[in-house]
Length: 614
Image (cartoon, rainbow, N blue to C red):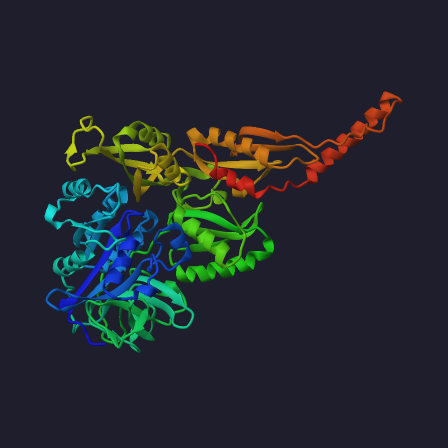
């Protein structure tokens, strides 16, 4: 393979709101450049997981090298990095943007600008990337490309001549897009003869080659059998193989400045080559990393337990293997009196948690029980010490707590102005604080509140993460008939009137059902949960009290009535004392049974927390 001049290399990614046709457009670019034969091309070709194809979303960033002949017959190397669209994977999007000089901003011609469109554009602007606005799906009957283009120009300051109109499905306008990539996106910059600096924007595990790091080379070059070092992690090793994505992994002699490819490191854990770290050579390597390394931090925590306790070791092995391919997943063993042995896992968000649970059940044939997702709290103790608590069962006693701080989000919601009232009601009920509100006209002009009619509104809110976790997105979509979109980012930690709500069944606290709630909502949550549990817990031969408590204070109580055997069934007469004797004997037996009896809590009880009405 002949080396490509750095002036003929273009590195770009595709950014878009979820379901705006990003993967379909990537397929069309691959087909038009002949990277794959038409007979071998699959729909969503860069989405390699079954879950990605089924759900129609991109979960893992993928890269592909395209060869394109321009109008003047020059051959250009186009390195496309496909990015996830869901807000849970913003960290991967930011790493992919760091590896590029340009970005295709893809917007659906039927939907227009959405919340994550704005968020991803701001990420690209922060990276000083050249942005090419692309209006996609122009072949649809409901498409309004001119209106959407005007909205894009006014919102982001593009000229009308910069906007391209394409259809990823039919291929209309794709050749013009390829020409625009060559003409508008700048060539990479870097010191070709300097020490190696290569940014890891993704990684995966291969059982034969170890961790394969997806890299963008900024300075120098790397060949196979080079001694390498990870600058932030400090791990050292040897590059077993280097290559490019065509889109399959294709070995090459070396990767040079400006190129995107992979390095097979031989490391046995993805954590040894984390996303965001810089690769250099062990001898005469660089002393300055490409950028400051910031690891991805879990935001959502939940307990995963095997439905059958005998499968604990299988779950542990499955998590180990999955963590090798997903560095964002964290887990540690935990013990629950109600559920037995399991693991406390950390996720980037609810979708990430859902994907991990589904992969564990599908790929490793496990039946799992997940506790209600929660967040990590900063607990300030009376003595001034601060501890992180991500499991409500480990919350210290109320007497030793000075204050509890919870994570808050910057929440952006974009919706038609006819839904202002219902959106404000929803967010206010979740303790949200309105920071700002802007009207966006069809022409894209920002106008004063109260003037625009039939146009869209951008809300800026501050809201606790715990209030957004469970059903907020579903409620937002149902209240706005699917027209609203949202995006969020972590803001800060704030102290609040938070309490640990415990559920006691037959006098025993069930740690897996305990959760942290705001004091004003604790009574309602406790009453709702005890009422649901009363219907879910099967009747025993003795009365089972179900209580919601904060410390020693009982907030709500329900009782599961006892099953009663009719011990008088065979008494067809005789003295009343005989009947009383049988009833007293039965009462004493029930009393003894209540002291030693154990109540089995069904799996539906743990799911009931998720389904509680707000």
